Image (tube, rainbow over all chains, first blue to last red; front, side, top):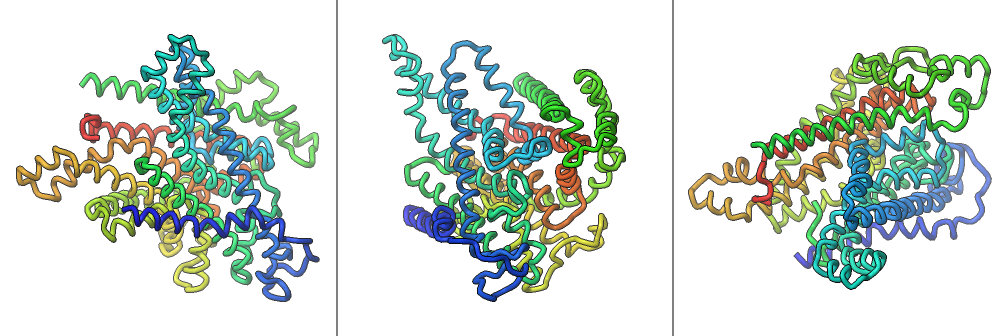
Length: 268
Length: 317
């Protein structure tokens, strides 16, 4: 199976490389936006034609990856920023009520579909990119906290923790220095899965118009807004859609192969 | 037996708590509006008459607790309030959108179960060989792809380039069964992610279960291969997957919203998205309660079924 894994890893890198490089470096090469032309035209000095308001599609593509990737990264980091302390606190406390108080509300929240929560919030606030990152992070907290807590509870039950306690080590030292460190691998595995899930949510929310301006340079928004011209100018839809497919597909292949390499069991 | 009964009791209690939480959360929506809710909902042209109408419709002059009690009391009777945009009862919106969504969802589930289980068992039987590698790689790759991206690509290739299928369901209204060709692409896109998840799950569980001592023992007794696989190994392979099955339901509900928007199907998802765009709070609340309670109930059912299939999941896993 090792050969297969290396193959998958290479495939993942190859698939994710183009969209990721475009997303991170694209804005540097985009240059000044040219004058707007007619909408949905092909050729005429535009390599990929023009979009629904007559902007150059290639330039939009160069700008459109960054918001997707950055929002997803920020949302994942934010989710852990909340989930980690919550989970560590509830795993290490000996007060039963505190544990229940911290984890029970999350169990209850876990049942609500994530996209529904995001749409609900979008009805009331009109979230920008930051708001979208916060929302996506918030819907990821319950699941992340539950997973981290399971790993932390296991580590906290080890004799080493008891020994550290008897030595009079500080809570901080035990929680971060020992328990936190011993669950790094589980965390890394979960972070990979979570990032692909977050990418999915960020892109889907943007496609549905949550957290983005209606004419934003964003791959998901481009797919949505240029759909009306699919008959005359498919490139304005197909190119950003392919980039999103490459980004999510490649990331998933890559994380899966990387996890198997470190000797972790496969996730279902 | 008492263990099973107490599990069911605890699970039902959690379900009730989750339902209550969904109702509270959805109600809290109007309370979260910054400042005067009526002014916020009136939008860009705050016309005094409209603000007054919204205040009247949402009964904002009364205390929140009283409104919550009234609203929650109406829910079991199917009274979800009236729309701010049209003044029609929200229940009518739900009744109108229910048919297409139910059709999409039931078609998808009807195909999902045999396809997911079949491919999963097939891959597990050929573990490590070409077929398994092919199934595993494809499911892993498609697993994370957003429906809308996959959907537009399929439309471009199958509908526009090859002309095999209609690109959207525009013009068919709610009579989708009369135009089965229009249903192929939506169901295909809706199936993609849940099938991948289910196949990976069944495959992993089956590989574990087929390697277990009780399967070896059953084989020694001369029990036929198919019977070992489907009546002994498969139920046990499923139990550890209950949580994952629940996530599949979540995906289906999210997927329905996206797929209806993409293929212009007038179901609940489209109604929800329109209401979100118009900030029609009562309609959003009504639909959110329907979607939320549906998820809670389906999750509950998935957990109970998984528990029923393998009551001693600890032994087999």
